[in-house]
Length: 382
Image 1 (cartoon, rainbow, N blue to C red):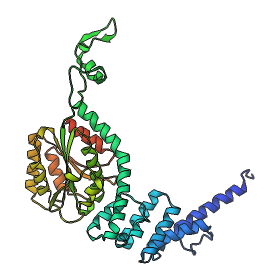
Image 2 (image 1 turned 90 degrees about the horizontal axis):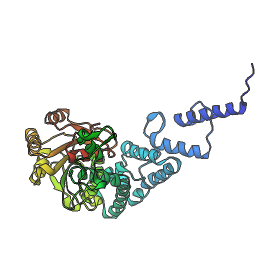
Image 3 (image 1 turned 135 degrees about the vertical axis):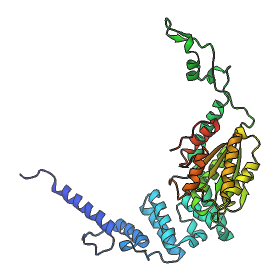
Image 4 (image 1 turned 30 degrees about the vertical axis):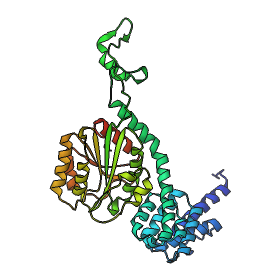
């Protein structure tokens, strides 16, 4: 029986399949016989320059900044931002282009993202003055994007947690916690009226203008934690902007640096870090412990892959002592969208035995984790 479909439509679908295979295989001798149009040819050249044929390293970028800057402009023309960021990251990893990022014209051509910020921070000490201002502009753009995405929800979530932590039995009408009030007054249920008489009101207390809670962010700045450092710095600035929370930010490798006085500007915080080097969690926790004045009202957040280079038993002892004094202690293996990195499972298990589960946390989940810690309820471990 003869088909009734449009033969032209079938031909178009076949051509589309050939085009896709041609783009996947690359090179002119791919067996498809498909001839690319101008735009597809440009996309193909950009891909080949990075990935080459058969998975070999591309040779099209060369080693010069003008070639790479031109390629960066091409991929921004042909691909969406999310793909551009992946290709940039691959170019840095596969072709060793980090040193070219020290040239201002290169930085002006890239698509800013968290991973690029991490790379720039790792190059911070080698960065010439001619590049530094351009690099700060790139970092600031990413920080502003993250703040726009995360700040409002973080403030709202934590403000609610602070209000709930100060319940009152004489609330204003707008502050009544109706669920708890009804549960507390079920004995006063009047079946004939099908209602509960609220003899005792329970409400949310208004958070006072004075400091209610203290939060210490203790951040591992080893090279594998780059994205976590970026996100933690942004969250630190957001927390510091809340009057009811006194926020301290500490970064560490084998040394400890307290960046609390720079929290007003997360870009300053980021350029105060030094990605790479060893890890001494025990020394960092000793510094944090020395700053705690109100244990029952303090949350300590350790962000680390737990590859401890210091004294393990002392590290665990400090965590146990802080927990015993009333501190809410949180351990995050990462604060990023990438899941948990390689981490020390033995140390994670030892912390879990102390009642401190270690888990990776996305930036979107972080406000809920902090709210639970402030209210001293179970953490929303993913």
